[in-house]
Image (tube, rainbow, N blue to C red; front, top):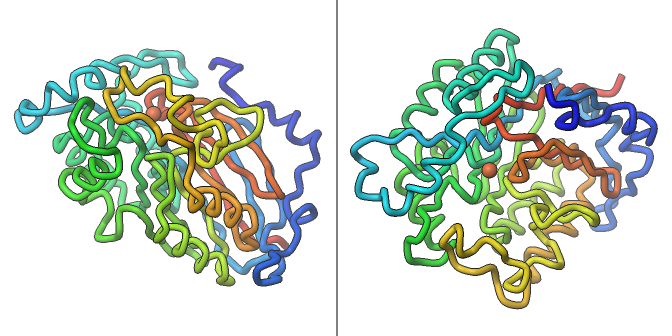
Length: 331
Ligand SMILES: [Fe+2]
């Protein structure tokens, strides 16, 4: 176990993080915060809410980077080659043994099954490119667990590097074509999964940006009395964090884009984020019923708390990492 890969729970405890106490009621609807407490040890989290929910345990899985492929992918090899070679062999986050991404995914799901986990939250880059073979394989593994799951895409899930088109267009194309079964009939860009009195809300921000319909969707759910957990791939901006925290990051944009050539994609937007993306950021940190944000993308575990709302970024499941999160009603 690489100790530096683990979040220092003592440090968090020292901060006395009690979400409810520091959370003002929403100015928009004046509702009382549903957040009670938040605790963390290594990759385990415990979240209490004032809402009446059934005790629920979830595994948060992100960035497995599966790259298995078959003859159906041969015509896309020009676009998948670099990522097909990435994450071939990884160090298991606990045993330090070498593991493939498929082994990591299988191990995590096996553990979820053995531990009677209620729900799986998948926050993107489960695939390194939109391989039909990988999607089929992952779905089979997920369905075998019989555990309900929610999936939102990451920037690699739909990306064939060097293919022409904007990021928004390519996401639409491949979410519709190859990733479609992962959405279980729901909208790829915004969807909710209601479970045990909780609402898991998926917002696809894998282009780093938020669309007007996604903002509208979130704002409506933020008005409800059902506690929500927000699932996104790219973490929301936090001062002091890297550009990986790129959604609503004031430094995001054409000038700050270092990887567009390697990833063979369009450059980030000239002039930075849209007003809609910045408005979404404000709406998230005003939502009285938001219990927490689950994200990935950076491949490093980290927690930030803003206005009493915890953003939990999980490390990459390519190393079999997962976050184990329990939700309960505050006694
Ligand atoms: Fe990733």
